[in-house]
Length: 364
Image 1 (cartoon, rainbow, N blue to C red):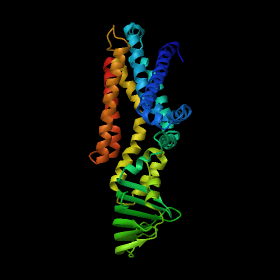
Image 2: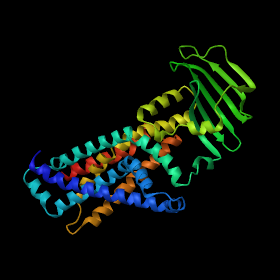
Image 3: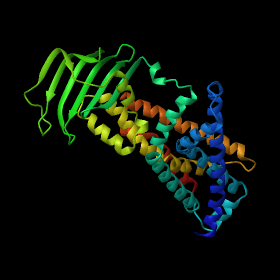
Image 4: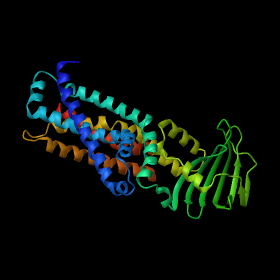
């Protein structure tokens, strides 16, 4: 590594580490204050709180890193610009792209680290933290508050995959039901469609039920069965369904892909679309560090000579707010069917990436 690259990277890494520490501290402090009543009421120990946030650390890291690296970029390059060091470097024959290369490489490494963290640690961390949070809140089951659950999906016994449009947890009634039955090799055997199912006396009764049978080529056979009212040998209770339902945030990418593949054999288009958006967003969110770095570089060259860390922080917050708000809107449009899932996840990163490249090219 050249001396100039080390000269640029050293303050960026130091600033990034400092910003990351501050953001994580503020994140934890705000979360503790929001649950302070529950913590005091339920006499939660300091050690337990420490274990909770240690478990949740991978999630906090992935959420705060993009903002921290953006602030480090704007502050460090803005300082070099205010001290006329960038002008001296460019006078020596270095282009803006050459000056940005160390930071771009750092952003790429950080994006890979975030994707790896999201894939290997975040799902398990969220699951464990969710269980620990129940103790902080006094053992309250937040899922019990939801009387109606929409778009419920879960794996059942005997290789059954369930999709339910709405589930009335209070009355134990499901509506809009699709059940896929698989063999031991995960080949589709049968598909059950019913308008409603009610649970009473440990028995599930299905209404307006149609059962389709499939051959080994996934083609419907002639053994289609219909019944106005039918009792099915499903051993899971409503509480089992709630405990086994699938949460995309607790899945890895491979689990999400497998889950979507299974659902594609059903008519659960809304669930497939929503999960596809979540899947593509796993990749798009990982590159947010690199995107925000490229966006921050042009802004660093327009910071006034008297500007300080406060102006850098203001620009950082404005860019981050705009990026993540537009991303949230895009994802919501994708899940509602307005945008294709891939486009919903990638349109905002692609837009910011193209605008940043144009700005850097013009500045060069």
